[in-house]
Length: 208
Image 1 (cartoon, rainbow, N blue to C red):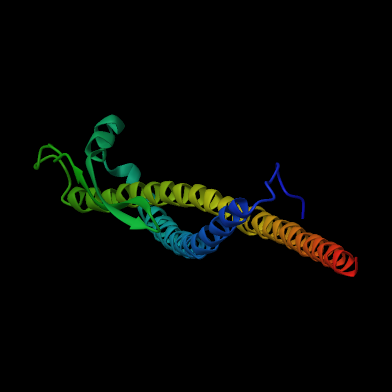
Image 2: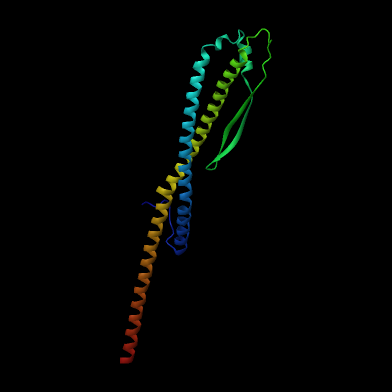
């Protein structure tokens, strides 16, 4: 394992590398858990989106039969079906705030009750359901995009810790320990040599 940058072959550096390694090893499980939670939530949101899309298609196909008969003035119809307010709440998933769809408020349509057919009210409600589903699907897709971006960042951090930071710290610790061990062995060897020399000198002096 190649060590990035220069490391000091000292006891102080050994302590620093050990502290860093403990921090990486403590933080990594949290990142891995976050990654797993994000993956599960993305899958859940995709399933939810698929359900909404299926429901939307069914209701749209049913409405196509009569939707064109609702009114002659298309601009007026669109005004009746334009959301006035979209209410949402916030849900926190693995540290990520997502907007969760609540409901849509529409402007009350104004038309002549005597001129409009009796089925118009029901028709408008059916079309409003399509609008609501469309808004809900858009919000779900936006949430998926946010979650996927957070997953990408989290995955990069997990890889950084697993493949770079932890191996580098472990390798630095190994190199420093070997160096310090060699230095200690050399010091012991020099001490023995010095001791032997001193003992030899003492013996020589005694012999004289």
